[in-house]
Amino acid sequence: MSIVYGLIFADKSMSSLGELVRHRTSASLPYACRYRLIDFALSAMQNAGIRDVGVVMSENYQSLLDHLGSGKVWDMSRKSGGMRLLPPFDAMNSPRGENADVMERLISLETFISELNADYFLLTTGNLIANIDCDALFKAHLDSGASVSLVMNERMGSREYFPFPVDKEGYVENNRGNLDENSKLHFLNTAIMSKPTLLQMIKLCAIIGNSGSFNYGIQRLIDDGCSIKAFMHEGYAESIDSIQNFYDSNMVLLNSKLRRELFTAERPVHTKLGLDLSTYYSEEASCRNSLVADGCMIEGEVLNSILFRRVVVKKGAVIRNSIIMQDTVVSEGADLSYVIADKDVVIGAGVHLIGSPKLPIVLPKACVL
Figure 1 (cartoon, one colour):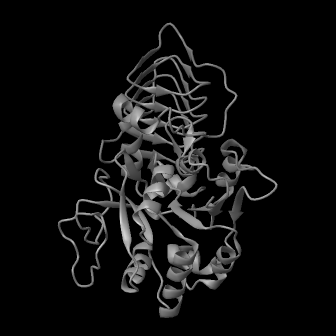
Figure 2 (figure 1 turned 90 degrees about the vertical axis):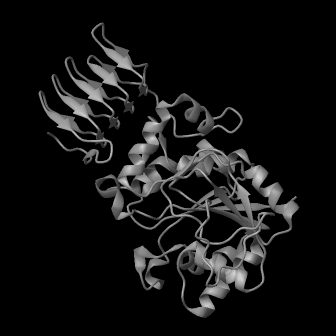
Figure 3 (figure 1 turned 180 degrees about the vertical axis):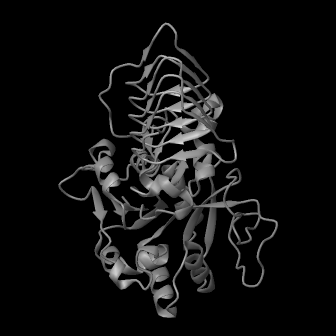
């Protein structure tokens, strides 16, 4: 039976996410009342029976470590194999340090990869929201006979289109001087390939001495005669790389159809468990079209919003179209619209904050207004 090893790149804290990643990587961003973004990658691998996973880290990873623990939640706490946390030992070797791209990380991990007992590698990022069927991906990859299979999606609104032409059979063509301006595909930065192919890609980039994005590595393989196959992921997908798409990707969960598409019984998304009591609603409370986690206390009005664990909404407070993270307190008479409040925020009595759908207000962790 083939052994598949998972590699999750959880090392990015993109500046476009602003205050949301001041104290964490994008992979540990809270999502959907109780999850972290990396839960999707870990759960997809767990659901496919992949138990050996390496999580590549770089900076601001304390929040990520707290969330992952030993990996027990994803059945990856094992004496042999299991989850390995790969620290930023490679930063000194990279000319760009903490800003290194995927191929630079892979080059620094070449020895580690070559010594692993694995036949195939599944590579993905920690900031991708998608419930990918990795079992189907692996089977399709074996059936295709391709060197690499890339996960594609046509519905991912915020990312640039995949620059490589894809033929009718789903094979990626060489795009040297021929960018596909009509492409409707998005690459989800998720791929599967054999161990020899991964090491081949690493060596090709290292020899040239110019490493960069994963697309660059794919181009090197195409130039070297490798076949690349597109695997279509038909469900919801979004890569979180800005405050705007973090806000939008949370708010789409108010659509029950999309919510069921992302959180399926067949491929559950696992996360660190909380031990909170049920949410308390007072007689005066009003909560409409919202997702509210356990442990909250609602005495005011909540409309079209996402509330994480242990949020307190006091009497007379109004929250509309907002994302309120755990342990935040919204005091009496406060009025919030289009606001993203990070953890442990205290919003004083009578405070009014009005953002917009395209420019939500972001309140940093533990701020007091």
